[in-house]
Image 1 (cartoon, rainbow, N blue to C red):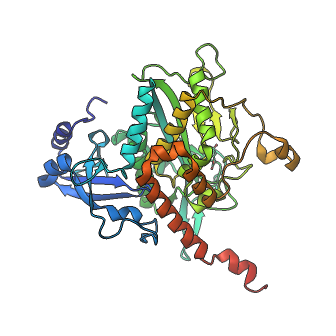
Image 2: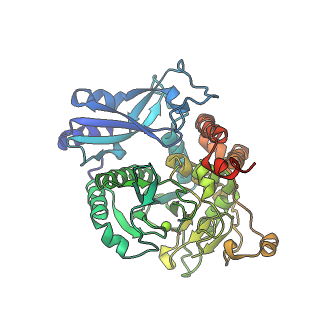
Image 3: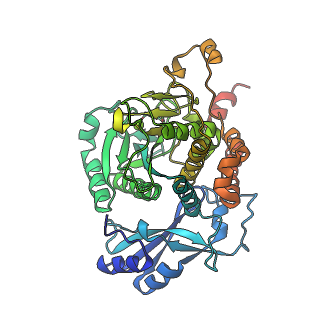
Length: 451
Ligand code: GLU
Ligand code: MG
């Protein structure tokens, strides 16, 4: 869009043009949690040019708001400046006179802070451009609509299951609100569908640059949450809410273009079926680094209750055309061919996940990594013997396994840089420790009156 500001001056003009009185200056930490301050008009110039101060120590707060025991950013670690990226400017129709910008994190002297997820992503975007390519991406979240009863238990909002049209009819008020509000915010909704589980939906938005993809993702989650709350529902993006129902994915739709973004280089130009060599190599890189990418895309204990064979969530490292059981699916015929990377979920830090994906894909391009032949079949419906004889590998089965694989992956850790990596590990291990030390209801149900 031509009226998207790209410079600080253009951002200031846009704030004036849109009659904005309150600017939310937001950054996403290593766990993907948005933190913000609101700035009144009188502070716009300084906020846009120099940024807004936050404590670096915020980066070692886990999702429960507990300072991680192994935190290295303590009360004495000083400040970071959240400096607006003008391209991310969005008016928030829900809050009159209010707009939001996402930010780069810098040191107080203005130099880039190595802990800044957006800067890590920019570095990989630039590295891909140096190889003659650009990435187009779209993030496709699934979510459940729930009600909460008087005992604090959650239930699917209705019984509509498996892709039913009735799901659109029953929730039309909610769905229209989501589409209308996102459209007003400049997010192009491609489609919303009823997903497999009761009360489960998924939303697709138009693909764009990696930054457009992550900057659309925040509004998508916000609008879905707020629109649900207005109707008395709870919207959840949690990877596995109900053990008996399918989980919620965050599929990444990826395609490789020339640097100008004019030509899609992912499909094979000479046939309708296969991928181009760069498309295959990029996928080869994803498969090679899949264990580390699993840590980035699936960074919570709950993530590993979703990644199970036979659930359409991947547990294995094969790819296929139209195969929904593997880690990469190639949807669509001909020019619609692209890569759908399927293991991630909505607990990820989207900028860091894409940073890892780009680094892995780049490794594939540079080293012409062959992804091997496509796989036909579903591991969820294979016998133990067939699985033992198959050539595919397994995704990490648990969070500790995935985090260890991430630490061991030189390509992906180099792309993350030492600071985002360190704090991502500190935060996720802090949550893991808390989970491990909790006595869960299952343990009481199983052992309390029996042993
Ligand atoms: N709900 C499935 C998952 O958690 C994905 C279903 C689909 O293919 O869209 O991965
Ligand atoms: Mg889906």
